[in-house]
Amino acid sequence: MKDVVVIGGGIAGLQAAVYTAKAGEDTLVLDSDESLVYNTSNIQNLVGHDYIAGQELLRNGREKLEDFNGEFREEKVEKLEKTDNGFLVTAEENEYEAEYVVLASAGMTDYLKPLDVEFEESKEGPYWMDRHIVTDEDNKVMGGLYAAGLIRYWVYQTAFAMGDGTKAAVNLLSDKYGEPYQDHDT
Image 1 (spheres, rainbow, N blue to C red):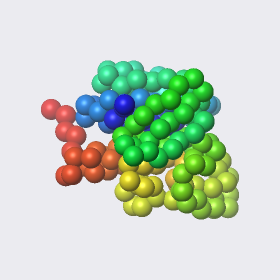
Image 2 (image 1 turned 135 degrees about the vertical axis):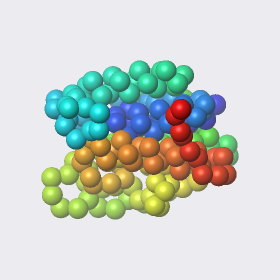
Image 3 (image 1 turned 90 degrees about the vertical axis):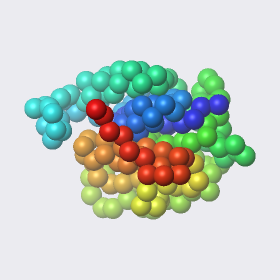
Image 4 (image 1 turned 30 degrees about the horizontal axis):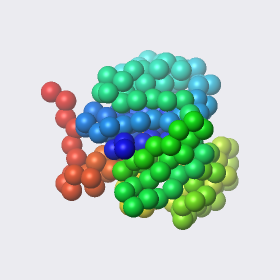
């Protein structure tokens, strides 16, 4: 059983996974390797970078996840179900049990059909998703289930997705530990 499974290994998912893995949680990222940021070659709005390509950002995120003993697997998730102990994630090749799950799969939501989750229609304009999952202000969908990035919000910006991944992870860890989670490097 994993502590945390993150569904979606784009910017929001990797950021959430890095935080939970750094906190010592046994973290697995499942990804179909179709992140929207792959096609972005010149991201200029991130602190610490004059510019960076999306592929490089994803590669760096996977390396950082590995540094904190997190795991990345390229597997498409087919179904997510609630269990007595958390969640059962059914992927193409394996099944995984997890205490907590972070949804970060952008427009891919078919695997959520077994769950009773609420969606809202997208706003008008050039947005990728037709609908978004409804969360509370702490990114929580339901007990143990969180969402980050484009699966829950319309802001189509790399910096926002990273921050939203951080927010989901910090709120997950705060709920798990029963006190506000803080991550301060020395």
